[in-house]
Image (cartoon, rainbow, N blue to C red; front, side, top):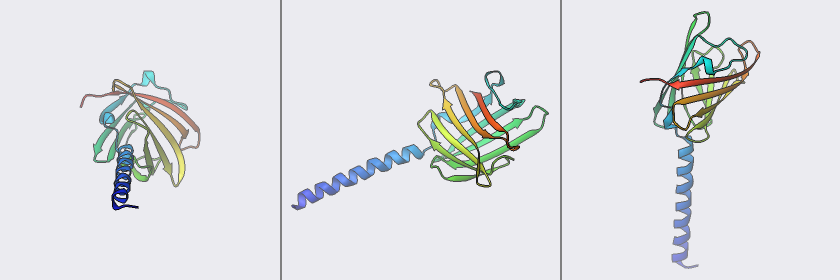
Length: 165
C-alpha cells in the first residue's frame, strides 16, 4: 500500500470521526427554543389524578451544553413549591433540589422541538416527561406518565405558553 493511500484512508477516518463527534455533540446540546419562562395554561391541561395546580411556571436557562430548569408551583391549597436542576442532554443523572417526588433527573434531546426527561427518587423512576415545543415556538406541551409521591398512577398533559421575559 502506498503512503498516499494510507494518508487518504487516515484523512477519511479523521473526517468521519469529526462528523460523528459533531452529530453527538449536537444531540447533547440543550434545545435553544426552550429558553425563557413558560406559564401553565390550566384550561388546556389535564391532570390525572387531579387537581391541577393553581399556577405553575418553568424557566429554562441554557448554560453551554447544560440547561438550568427552575419550576415554581402553587398548589390548589395555596402551598408554594420551588425546585430546580441543572442538567445536560446526555442521558446522565443530575441532582434535583426541592422536589419532594424526585431527587435525580436525566435529559434526552430527541430534536430541537422534542425531548424526554426521567425523574427518579431513590433510584426508582417516578415520572417520564415527553416535551414538545410547537413549530411556532409559542406553546410547550409536557406529557407525564408515572406515579405520584403517594404511589398513584399519574398521566398528565400540561400545556404551557411562553411568558414575557
